[in-house]
Structure formats: C-alpha cells, structure tokens
Amino acid sequence: VTAMKPECLVPLFVSTSGASGDDLGSDETELVQLVWQVVDLKNDKVTGELRELLIRPEAEELDTEKLEQRGLSEEQIYAAQPLEHALRQFNNSLTAELLSNGREQSFCLCTDGQRHLRQVVHPETSNKNIILPPSFYSFFDLRKEFQKNFPSVAKHKELELQFMADYLDVCVDSSLAFAALKVQQMVKIIQTLVTEPVFHIFSNPESVHDRFETGTCRLQCVGDNTVIRARGLPWQASDKDIARFFRGLNIAKGGAALCLNNQGRRNGEALVCFESQEHRDLGLQRHKHHMANRYIEVYKATGEDFLKIAGGCSSEVAHFLSGEGHVIVRMRGLPYSATPQQVLQFFSDCSPTDDSKDCCPVAGGGAGILLVRYPDGRPTGDAFVLFSSEDFAQVALKKHKQRLGKRYIELFKSTAAEVTQVCNRFSSTPLLPVPPPPLISMMPSPLTTGLLGLPYDATVQNILEFLGEFTGDIAPHGVHMVLNAQGRPSGECFIQMCSVERAFLAAHRCHRQPMQDRYVEVFPCSLDDMLQVLRGGALGPCGLFWGRLLSHWLVGVGAIPLSGSKSGISVCVCVCVCVCSRMLDTLVQITFFLQL
Image (cartoon, rainbow, N blue to C red):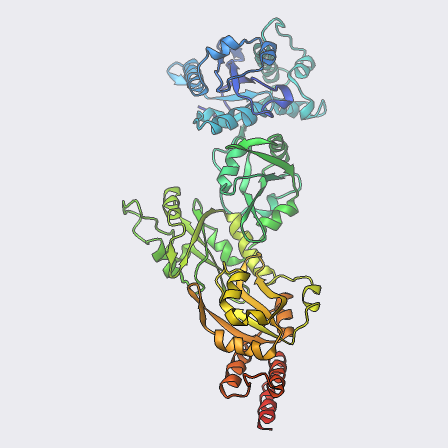
C-alpha cells in the first residue's frame, strides 16, 4: 500500500552485471541483485533485517570483474531465480513484513537517485514483458529529499551516498558487502533526516507513468531542454513502441511524434518530448539501446524541431483528436470520390456488441473519420480513422490492401502527431514542388501536351507505351512527371513535343484512352502553363478547359490539317496563345483567321 505520506520507507538498491553509479543502466546489462530494508518513519526504527535477492540473467556471459566488485560470483548468479520470480518474491516478502496488527502499513520505495528504477527495473521488465508490482511506480529520490533541506550544499548530480553520510556525520559498518553498505547508508540518512533537528517529512513521491497518454501535446510543455530525436526506428514502430523504449521516463501527453519524409512515409525518426529536462537527460543515456534487433540512436533536439512535426492544427483536426483512448489508423490511396459512408462500409460498420472476429466499428461513426484535403478542398486520398480499442484496430489493419472501389487501400497504425503533421503539410505547403528553373528553360518547345488522371504508379515507360506512335515526336528529356508536396506522383504529366501538329493529333487520338484501370485525359497547353505548374502554381479551370476544348474542336472541324501544312502550324500557334492568355475574345480572332 503506497501513500502520499507513507508510514514506512523501503530503501532499495539494485545491481546489474555491468555499469554502476551514475552510469547505471546505460549499457543495457541485466539485473542481478536486489537489496532492501524497511524503515518505520512513525517510530523511527528499522523494522526488519537487511534482505537480498539474487537474480539469474538471460545473458550467457557475465563480467566476472564487475561481479567481484559487488561481492558476487558467477556460481551464485546462475544458481539464482529469474527476474519474474524474484520480483514476485520481493513483493510477497515486503507485504508480509509490513503487516502490523492485521493491517498492512503504507509504504514507498526510496532509491539513491533516479536510475535504479527508471533506467534499470522498468526498461528490463518492459523488454521481458514482466508486469511490475504497483509499488514500483512511485518512489522517493533520497538525493532530492536531502537537497530540500540542504539546497546549497551540492548539486543533485554531485550528491552521492557517501557525501550525504559524511555531511550528516553518519557512520556504517564498512565491512559490509557493496550493496548492503549502500542500503545501510540510506537507512541511516533517512533516520537522521526525520529526527531532530531536521524533522523532514517524506511526502509527494515521484511517479512513473504506467502507460503512454495519447492525444495532442500541450505546446507550453515543449521546451528546448525536454526534447530528443530518436533515429533508426523500425518503419512499423508506433508511438507506443517509442514510449516502451523509453519506459521508466515520463513522456508528455502526445509527446511521441513520428517523422515523415517528403513522400509522406515514416523515415525511421521520431521526436520525443519529456516532462522535464531530468528525464530528457536520462533518455539521452539510452543512446544505442535496442528496440527488437535494432539499435536506436538518441540525440538532443529543440522545442522548435518538435513543433515543426507536431505543432498547432486546425479546429477540425483538434476536434478529431479530442477523444481519449482512441487508436488511430491511417488510410492511404483512397479514391478521390470516397465519402465517410464508404469508409464506414469498408470497415463493416457493425454493432460494438457484435462478437464477430471481423468486426471493427469506427468510433463515433462518421465523426471518427477525417478525410485529408488540400487548401482548395480537393481530397488527397488520405484519411484517418478512430477505433475505440486496440483489438478493433488490429482487426481493421487486416484489411490492408483490400479494395475500395477500384483502388486498393493501404492501412497503417498512426498517431496524433502524424495526423497533425500530415494535415499541416497538405494544408500549408504549395500543392506542387518547385523544380530548378534551368531544367525547362534549356529545352525550348513550341507546344506542350498535358496528361491528367495517370495511375500513381505510372512510369515514364508506361507513358511512352501509352502514346504509342507519338513517342518519336517527344523532345529530348521532354517528359515531366508532376509530384505533389509530399514527393508522391500527382497523376499529372507534361510532355514537350517537337511538332505542334503532332501534339494536337496526340491529344485528339489519346484523349480518354485507358492506362491500366484508369482513363487518361490528354490536352494541349502552352510552355508557360507547364512552367507555372512545375514552379508551384496551378492552372485555372479556364486554362484547362479551353486547352482541351480547342484541340478537339479544331481537329474536328478540319482546321488543323493532318498533313503538316504551314497554315495548320499557324493555327496551332494561335491556339497556344489562346490557351496561355485564357482570353475568350481570342476565339473570335481564331475564327476570323480560319475564315481567311
């Protein structure tokens, strides 16, 4: 039974088979020893004898030199019980010892600094899927309690048990083994602090978060001294996997933000915001610790870095993320015409009481679906969906690459930070990237042909096959694929043609012809139109409309001869001027020219 003002303190000291002191837990070595003793704060006495538990690690090789420094041997360690059994025995022994007159006294653990629990016990039990007793989620840091009464004596990092014992004039038996000596020093320091003249009261212990809290990170919690960058993450890692890697350290609500690359895919990096600089510094000590079979690099980052990834969001996104405890799944590759009702149907919107194993109801129905859009309202093909539990989300993920309409849908487990990042990227950046200007200016061409509605996986070779007989009329390096702000294909392409006549004829014959399972629109446009799009702009509806209309109208009425005469090329030049200027009165000029 733990309490804000416990009746008893349990000084606890842990040893690993590796580093000790201020480097404890930095090398991922396993626990080999627990030593503790109970101190009755109310009556200022030690209620039990010094206790020790040895633990058998899973590693086959141990550092015998380090063990000898702790007064241990390989034979003792390999004859001990595994960690899970040792923790169960620790909890049972402590419970029995704290029973007084049929009532269990309230207690709290006390350690020499933060590392014993935060850097050793919690990470190792998390990696081994061992459930810790509740008593390990709150503790007193003896160094901080000492510093509350003697703030000017030394900094927290400089406080060691021997220093505190000397300052308080505390003496212990120096012949004791290493861990036993440390626990005895802690007991004497605690007894000195709670008695005259200090009369210190142990209250408000520190807590260790038992789970990662999802949601939107409060911007006021983000500081330059609380953020780290983790690199080398598995591509399928989620924010909960990151929280598990940093188990024992308190991450701020929504403080695990997965980074995306220019294609909108995870790049193996994440920014993590902790509740304090102390926890950030401890997180940096996990540099090159392992997540599964990969080692993770950990570096300092700034609050600005974090805000770029998981900063502010629109009211629509904030409302979508306002629920607590939901699991988020990202959908990619949706048809542009997809509606929330079709998404609900895709996930087989059934009753939450349905026992079917294929049931994965969306939390909140249509309100649990966020369709991502460009600033002009056009859909991007991405969406985020909320599920009320991890089980429903796992069932939903099994629908990965199933079809909605004619498109197969990619599904990924997502995070609140990723929702914010994706929505911000689509809404606040140019729709199309800006290529280097010399790329086009060095390749002049009198006319350009535009293609709309290409399959997203279409390659230059696919486009050449689509154009067929007109492939030989393409200018050198004249195929320009248009990418969106995430670096992904937008379904558009511009082709510079060597012959104006052939460009119009290609638009006429290839328009609305199929490529894979999609029909492609083909229309003529000017070089200026192409440059405008490739430099980050967009053609207005007028430009696209007249470009398509004129090409088919002129060929249809025979204004563009198919034999390559000079008059035909002249007409094409006029059409190019018309499309570029987007002026309706130019139609009158062209009609008059044709009559001549």
